[in-house]
Image (tube, rainbow, N blue to C red; front, side, top):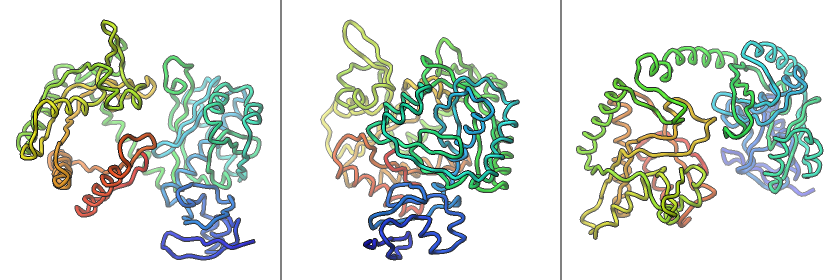
Length: 455
């Protein structure tokens, strides 16, 4: 068998026989690494540690010290939770169980439980972890998947949806689930977890679908990290904005207008004071505030691309035979203002700011206080400038954000650099140039950031 070249993150290389696995590479480095390795990144693909690597590649061995490795373990913890539920409640139908920040959730149909039942499920999960069940990936055909989940309409829907991408099932002991993976090699990889609460959630977050039972869980690499996070949550609960808003009579919600906050008199004072602060900064930094309509003809959204790429998140209505939408973003309306007059390069940069309310048709199951709503206003602005002015405008915008968060509110924040999504509009070269300039400025300003690929 021919050899392949493996390149490690430090750019060191080594030859291995084609078909080598990440586990074998880890063992070649050290037994300790082999014991702690939970997955691998082969080029840009996350894989199980027993997957054969048949071509030369860049390989990163992942442990729970890596975010990607910890997320793999969190996904495995979700499967352990579902396995425990199936053991205790055989009639429960599993649906989906994704990784979320700090842990996971898993949704079930035909499961009538409350928070009082979580301790029993946790005990069963600990048994599964002690059993050290090996996980195994099985690639299946559409027919095999449909046969295996013939009694589960949720899995049938997922099978039909993802059939073209290829289907796989992960098994551990008697349990199995339709899943892309990867997963930790055994259930023993999960060391610190806690089930936090149950909730009701609609399938796919759509109130037209059946209501399911959701179990939320935390999962960390170490018990000390889990304990610290639980303490933080307890403190945060005391300061939950929904609780404070209700107690101080700042805002309210009503089922007649779901996802749209009612600001009460005290809350309105706070909102206006915040807008006053931002307006003063707009004047100081050369922004021009405008007031724009909320409703626009379909033709604008077709031109902007929203009709094709954002249609499901828009509120559509028909007036006198014409289709209109409430605006979900300010971009097109600001472009209309820019195009309304003949502009010279001497007019640039032109900074247009807007507090106009925006409306997005968020799924009912995702709505949460003021953090996820259907109607909101944001201190939104668009800057029209020459290519030569871009870098300075970006620097000024970052400094504006930093001033508001750190100087005014004494708050820390993190930055993410989102790159070109799979469904993008425009020229790839222009996207690449924009991403490179953003990264360059953040690096020159010594600002730490994470790269959110395809976001």
